Length: 86
Image (cartoon, rainbow, N blue to C red):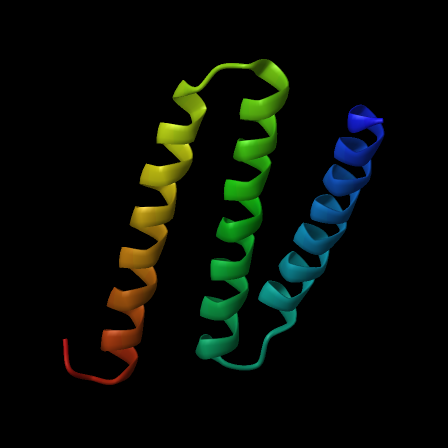
């Protein structure tokens, strides 16, 4: 039962990743691309968490945490740049 739920969740994550990638390449403005990139990083973090659960190795949670922090920092830097206050 748990494997079926994980497979369905993985499929939904892959579908949302593809849709976000489409938005990234077809976006009209830089803000849309930044939002799409942030969505892709959130999806990647959730995939890392799923891999952590299936493999049973807790070290991947640290990787996901650092990846999330760096992603947040990157979005803040781009937002400050777009406001022209950097």
